[in-house]
Length: 389
Image 1: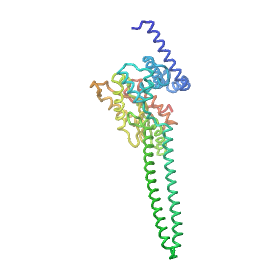
Image 2: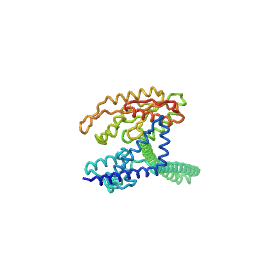
Image 3: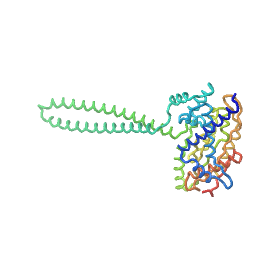
Image 4: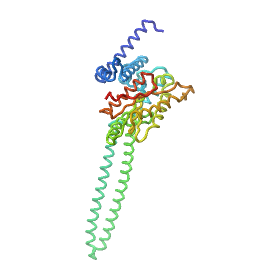
């Protein structure tokens, strides 16, 4: 057992590590203090100083620092990344691998982190991957074009040779040899045609396979791997497109920001696999609302965003609140243990997108309303005040 002095040194070391983490994040993330100050002033009602995003990031830095310190891991980008992916659920494979080794050994090491990262399959759709795919498609198209040109030239050559031989058919002395040459020309032409057809079929097959790969890559780049919902990148593109449609059609457009209440407690109490199932359950509940004019996406972690075209903010608020009430009345059970879980709820904020100059400003307004819902007791939906625009 550690004595008081040793414990004090450990706490000081932990505190110092957390400060170093914060400085390291500031170096890579820009002027964090200035950004935080600006964000707080934009969000803060008179007499209050809070910022949900800053508080969340600060807590995440502390959690990562505590994780690295608890396992005596070096402060490296690799270890920081694994800790981040494990604590946030950003990479499901890393999360499961860490959970498994913690269950078996109770601790992870620098060498283990290096080995698990090295062996993990890279599921990211990188720019290089897309570039290679597009290059292959381009090569196939060029090859196809070349085959068409060759076929056209062969047909021209065959036609010219045929005309030359036909002229000699009027001479009876030359007729027999000409027929032999015509037969040879035709056979050669038929053989070339077969070769071109075979090459074109193969090229078409490869092009189709590459098109399918590109489509899969596009879907992977825009889909959340855990819930199957569109991810943040896809939602941002949808938000821009739906804003233009709503403006052109003179339709209302509303956005909702939802966050599962006390989700960290779910992971801490029941494990990350159960937490994943909760995320899937909530995503399925929200996805039931989606349609041609309602888009639901996972924004990250335990956050979801919803976009309603054709619905005023008040109408969207009623729909989100109905989903909230539905979830709060469910009684969920931990599948692994059979243990009844504490009631799962979410809080949300809703904003009128067209009340703001920029749709991202509307999303921030919904986030501010969500923060107030959290602060005032959770398990509720708040409507953003449009006078903030």
